[in-house]
Image (tube, rainbow, N blue to C red; front, side):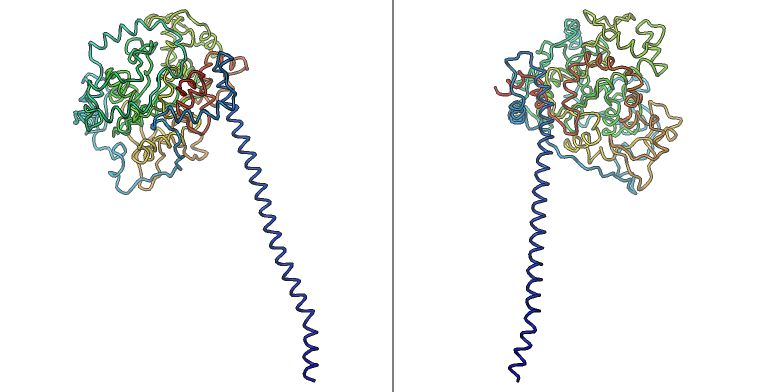
Length: 570
């Protein structure tokens, strides 16, 4: 009875056990199916990512290959586009010094905030307690007020300012009177050369110079060498390159100005910045003075004494050669869309501002304002020689060449790019100035110390009553977010309506707001084509750098020139 009852219960439980077993099997199968489906989907997504990445790589390769092909005039010298670009990175590594690599990380922007102790900020932002202006004690005391430093007491009392040591001051001293006379003769001899050839890599800088400097017994601990240091080892020498040498701008108002006219030096970071007119140069000069601690750093910087002291083309020839050949000095340049830059120059110097407009007309013997199309036509008339500095004839305006007004002179004629492009550690685009400037300043050690604290006036009301020669720093509140150098500020609708008011301070809109006016002035495709013909070499380089990635000069030179690629293999 008991056995039979037990068997009966077991038989009744058997279907239940079978059902449970089937459920378990189905559950395991469904989990495996989900896993397989996820793996398959992941594989498909990876394949899609691979395809997309390959498409992007092909796009970049095709762009650079087109530029490389355009650079080669001899068909027999042209390489397969893909092979050329596959080797560019290897060749760049081979020929570039360690200071020239552009593989620097993008630094996320974290706004700094005003601390409770304002005297812990960089000196330029600390409260103003001194109201006077004074000439630099390191320079002639006859400077006009706009050339003086204002609101900065220590600069008025420190005989070294803006230098940090006696050694730095001696190293960077300007050329003497005798050297100026020799330079004048050289510049006059070279001034007739209107179109120096674009070689891009006439001379290369390699690690050997840095090793020579480190092993030189004459090197002192401050990092500045005396005049006897191994001059025979110089690899880059604009005085030997059959070009107008640095410093010619002293005599001929920028025309035929020499290979490195627009270079500005930030000695604390060993950074040489190429300040091309109409490519945000004003903001960089203001930042230069910010690093020196000048509390009037937002003032018009162009004739301030510190700026003149840091101009490469005014320095003595020995210092120029040493800086050019020291790999620890990093050379930096930003480029701008040539058509946009030309329009900005026209609006700023020819048509918009009353004072500038009248000066332009007087300078060129005009009795009216040229419209933009007329301006382009005059630029398209190429003269046979550089006109003299004196005179008001319209011939001074004709042509786009070496001796053209620096505001519309080709960008590639600035700072030696047409001859010594591999010397540049970083070449960026004004369209990506926020992330690229941040990355560069972080790389040279200036972002954490100065860059993230940089601030400008949100409006002109806070500077009322102040001359543009002695503009005070912004009034800051505890906890307020600082803008950061060249960083875009989130704007309310009210602030956006004031964009043109602040354009000259931010470095983005530029004072002329030319980006938004392109379609108003370039009214036909022919006008843009004319600009492309006038600025052919600028466009070759612009097409390579106008992307978020920073480039080294070595990489760019090899993309532009068969000869540069050949030199890189030697």
